[in-house]
Image 1 (cartoon, rainbow, N blue to C red):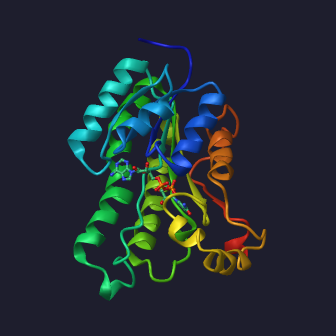
Image 2: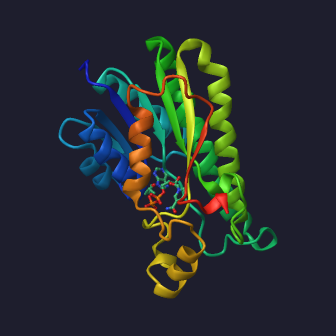
Length: 246
Ligand SMILES: NC(=O)c1ccc[n+]([C@@H]2O[C@H](COP(=O)([O-])OP(=O)(O)OC[C@H]3O[C@@H](n4cnc5c(N)ncnc54)[C@H](O)[C@@H]3O)[C@@H](O)[C@H]2O)c1
């Protein structure tokens, strides 16, 4: 089915920032293609008009199949939101204590994932002569998070991937920007933020005095995905309540 509505493909849309982004982009009028390991959550996020499916962003065949099916069903892909990400389990801490398998997993989801998705979607955007790749990196891609070596490394790489796409595809009408949230309250961070003492310690260090909600980050994605800001590409947009300004 081909459509005149703009189409956004969101990875990791079943939870947290991805889910808030899906709700926001749907309210903005986008048709959604939502892929996640959580197939039921992806279907809820995509809504009745959208397309959803099980997706492992680290798996080449899964990505190719999902992108091909989404493009066939919805006719085009205007915006790709590379959102799916993980921090690794509690063993993924300082470098010398990080199990190799945890390192590989974090890099696979947070770096290979955006690479595979972008690699599959860019030819469609080239054919359209337009498109926008929005990658959810992190302030951990700009400053190091203590005790999170694999995550910090992966987000630095995701940020550079976003810049690399901006430089290589500007001439064919495709833009690429990274969003760098500070701490946001989602399933990823609830083990710390649900503890009032730990939350207070974290919020004390943030000039605006609170962690972000998933909606705070989705608001920025919505502005980026809109028909404005046409001159913006290769940017790393920090949304952290002032955390990295201190
Ligand atoms: N929460 C924060 O404080 C924070 C801060 C900065 C950046 N981020 C980034 O924002 C993005 C979303 O994080 P969140 O906090 O919403 O996390 P979340 O855990 O709430 O949601 C992540 C979603 O990604 C999905 N996912 C995980 N691995 C996947 C895979 N291999 N393939 C497909 N889907 C997969 C999960 O099923 C889940 O639905 C991540 O890239 C994260 O690194 C989060």
